[in-house]
Image (cartoon, rainbow, N blue to C red; front, side, top):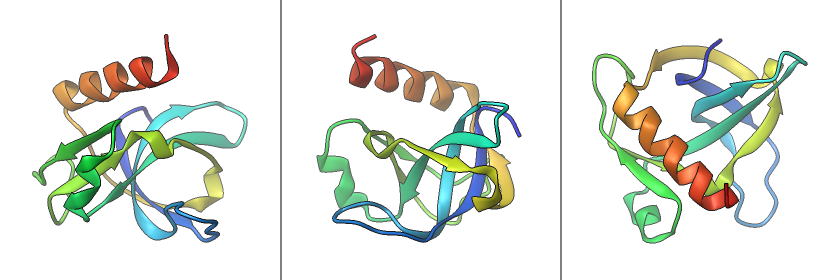
Length: 108
């Protein structure tokens, strides 16, 4: 598993407005501890009204089925066992945009 991998993850537990269920997510970091850091995706394009989001189009590299929104503000640390499969990888330009938004969000 590497940064930028597009994975299908199981986010089984939901509280409030958290993303849940089986959904695509982008791997941000593999901590080498059995825990990975991901940002979930949604197909609800209305989520673009929130700060710290990014639209992503499906392509042959990421293997997404529809236009999606990267919910960077929903960054999560999850156990590796929640990864059901890796379906693709985002391109370098999208990775740079996510990195920039993460730095801005975290005040780095």
